[in-house]
Length: 124
Image 1 (tube, one colour):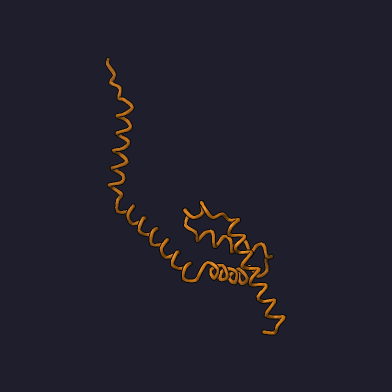
Image 2 (spheres, rainbow, N blue to C red):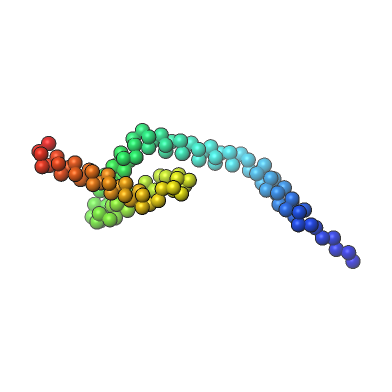
């Protein structure tokens, strides 16, 4: 009995055909997902540009104050960092770490605290 063996190249070609068929069969879904992802990124960029990242962080600080009222400052800060990090597109997460966001949130919080202190000292 003679067994015919396929070459490894034929096997790889078959896998390529299967992948191509999968793409062809699911092309509509792939396009829809791509359009939704692009639309979300454009919307997010527009929101950040519109309000500015600074204002977005301030909004989340205010939100954290109302939600995490009984918790300590670390829980509130973690809440803000998590919210900002979730908003970042995954491609940007490669370049922007949670530590970077942490420093930015702390800087903005310190500026707010300093402004409130100045306001209370000067009765403004």
